[in-house]
Length: 84
Image (cartoon, rainbow, N blue to C red; front, side):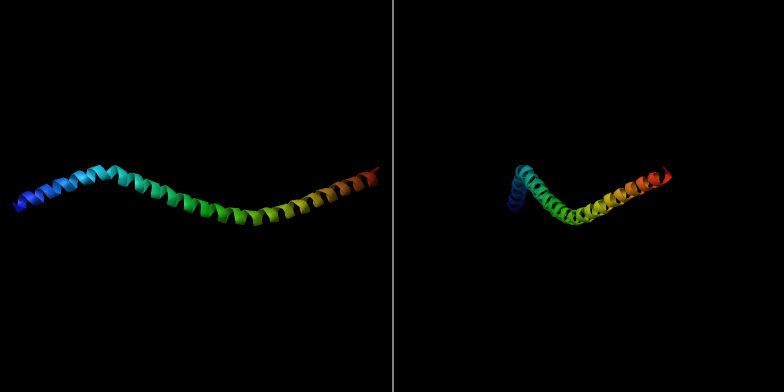
């Protein structure tokens, strides 16, 4: 009687596991995607905040670069005037 009960219990447990396995896999995949999205969005905000600082720095550098280009053009014009 005990052996039959244990055997039937194992068979029922196996059937329940087979029925719930697709649902458990779907839940695990959904949870994995949510965690991945949280990690990705966190790194996006970290990256975007650091890139904003870099963008500000680079825009200042480009302004200085354009001033250098203007100064270079003025120098070339002065050299041409002095040669002519």
